[in-house]
Length: 539
Image 1: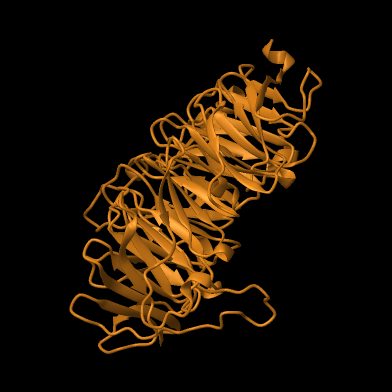
Image 2: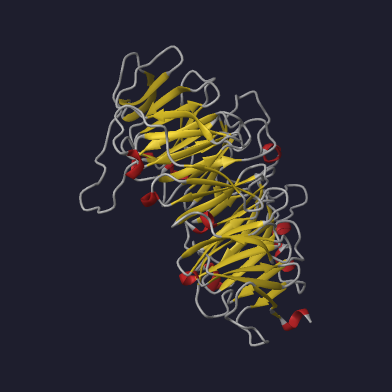
């Protein structure tokens, strides 16, 4: 395991999807740092009112753009082009506030969902035009993404709306966003839609209150398949009238779909038949076998500290359970709440509400349970590596787990535990922590870990392996915050190169939207597009 230098962080610090950059928002600026050298590549001055009220901070999928937004303003910057910037003011035309903002099909599209689901506004940064689509069914943060999906390759938008008490699915033309086809799905209360990885199928799932109903449509709206629940097994009682689908997941190759409900079972469907190929049961007891490893995290006092390790179970073990409904909580918590395929699409990790400290790793190719890992604390999040097969990162809940990241790979002797708290300055975690994969061309997996004061990179490599994403930084003199040290030969100030870029950020070649202007903008319309007022500086 190799660690980078600790670098200055904040509550908003995020690596790019390709791992080439790390962006951090400070009180008066946005700092973009190159991962390869750990040096600042661009600094952008931010208005104080924006920096203090950021509610959206995200990268585009290409890693070329970064978005910052408040309730009344959206700003987009480029990682490499100092001549580009875009400002969208009053993205909802001042009628309501924007409750969720994201990139659209490309870097040049911004989606803004209005409060109360009044409309979805799609802004084009290349044409300075906007299209409004009324009545998106899902619009709040955390659920808005369930109601829209971009078709792979063609990037046609599929959107779930609701009008007159009926669900509507619409497919939109790529550039104009005009409706090419729309239909009412066979649902009473659809809970989302999603394209398959190859773009052949559009999946729609019904509310759990309506039982198990999973619909598969072709791109032209033809209903190809309807799945109405798992095959009953011994012990099932009136399965058809029980709670239905809670969550579902496509695998990356598009060969399987996993569906979780409110029971302890997960059903795997094979594609394109969409028939049940595997039923995964989370049993109360797990017995190790030749092809099944059961790991249990153990904590023991050692030299005045706590030592953590995973022990391989030798006999049957019962994972810890929890009450389905904690005292004082009226919301029923049951069923599967983690469901994720790895990069290869052959491994599936699951977690149930009933056994919150245990993850189950299944092999859908051989149709067996491969590994069970029992942790000391409830599991908060699991993430497969985006490009490397069968490599899993796990984060747990609780103060004692804030500085820890757990890793699993079937080729290792045991799961690994990384203590980042001991690596950051002062060996003390401050505020909320983030632990996630850093996707990079480096052949060795790398983790990005941050609290509100510092962030650090960790490479899962041996001491003799020099291939780390920040390898250029290791041959240059830099301080703990990644700034180049003063040269003893020419006495060039350490921050001169970085500070020279500050003068480049207030360029005139920017795109500005005025969503709240009076230039003939009509606030109430359906599937209508209009040109927004431009900033006088651009004329």
